[in-house]
Length: 113
Image (cartoon, rainbow, N blue to C red; front, side):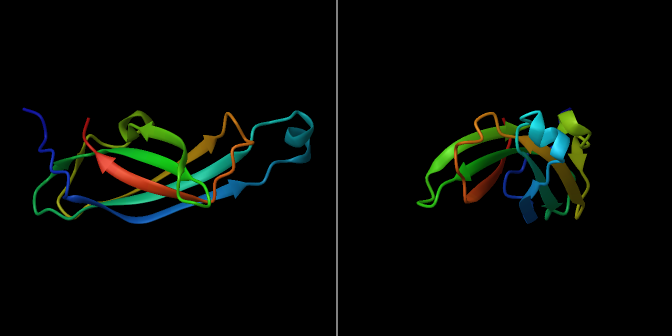
């Protein structure tokens, strides 16, 4: 039996995207810009629920989407089930394939595929 998928049970308590400073060697090698992405998911239900996926949308100054990425957090070691009241801190490093695309903000959405 699959774990309960309750979309409104898992809320985002914290999220941040910050640039990672590149070393001089990486700059000389034309390394892609890297970003640290951190998010804390909380199961607000009184029962265990399935760990959701995350949709990350990077936005421009007019809040228009410039890039979108769907993350299956289980691929990075997150458990398949969140216990009741559980808070799950997750950290990833993201690289932009097209670093010329400027973004100033982001939106996050949790969902079940």
